Image 1: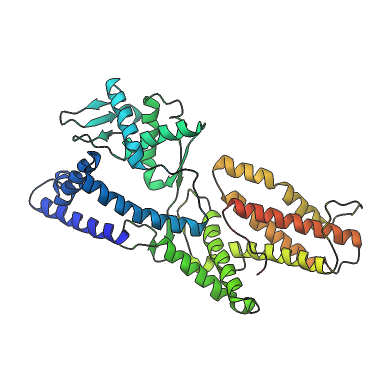
Image 2: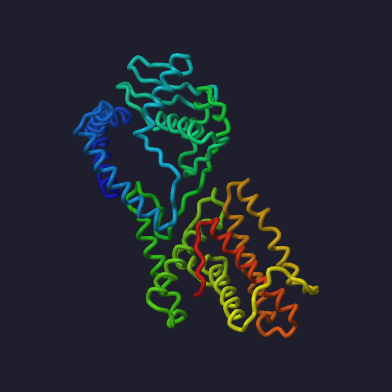
Amino acid sequence: MGDYYVRFDKEYRAQVKELVAKGMTEDDAKKEAPLMKEAQQMLEKWEAGDPEVRALWEKMNNWVYEGFDKTYKRLGISFDKIYYESQTYLDGKAKVNEGLEKGVFYRRPDGSVWADLAKDGLDEKLLLRADGTSVYMTQDIGTAQQRFRDYNIDKMIYVVGNEQNYHFQVLSILLDRLGFEWGKDLVHFSYGMVELPEGKMKSREGTVVDADDLMDEMIRTAKETSGDKLKDYSEEEVDNIARICGLGALKYFILKVDPRKNMMFNPKESIDFNGNTGPFIQYTYARIRSVIRKAAEAGLQVPARLEAKYELSERETQLVQNLASFPQTVKQAGKDYSPAFIANYCYDLAKAYNQFYHDFSILKEENADAQQFRLLLSSLIANTIKTGMDLLGIEVPERM
């Protein structure tokens, strides 16, 4: 589908250029280009319920949805409900016509419906075309109404790239004008663009970066980076660990930075088992789980609570304080809409534990009280890392 869009876009641009060369203005050329007129005719037929157009549309949509489902599943993403524009545009048109009757919007001589946003410091916005067909804004009005009706929510957050800042600014204004109390409180979580060393990760340009190809590359790189570390594991275990680390590296590298900023994603840097990376945190978790398993093999159990008094070292005290700050970190992440707080917390906790692990004995500790405390501390840190990474949608392996 991406290649098809690129070919369509190139042909459309060529048609516009040809019409402009013949003396037509660029705006008129965009409207009169043969491909655009053909697409407009198909849209009219679709909204009119033309059986042939609807059947073709459904067939192509199913291809897209099937591909989306596979990609989302690999990423561990699921949705409570999916809203389709084909099911929301009628609600949107109804609200626009209602706004037209109330004088909130106006109709131009050609029959199209517009919103005048001059008093908000913006321009005019098309809501219904001259032929009566809907546009993205119309559909988004209908979708917003359905979501609030279905879930009785207090606030809605749109997680969409910063290239759509204007669109959601307008949507918020229009919803407010239409009388929706929650219109003003609409939140557009405007995240930055992600770039690769080779160029921007955008599907609407000549160079297409396929999400599945990127995931395959990350898993392959993780497997190569592990080298001989997994030589004693079965092929199935190696493949699973490579998958967990590869996808973890991809997600973590993107989530650890302020989501509002543009960023450069470096696949090789993200898979490094040292530094602020997903694999480093995953390895720390696996290390702790190894300690717990070895303790069990030696007949040592992680205590549910500590009965004896044990005087903590400065580093142990710091680790306890780090653990105590986790709830506040999660709260801050939610308040600022920034998973980076949780990502960097997990890294700091993993780094601090590794320093502790290097300097203090656990299994070989002769003081029973100290050993019990350190086993419990290690277990709590592992659980916290697992919880934090789970909030980021990242798996952690039991061993690496």
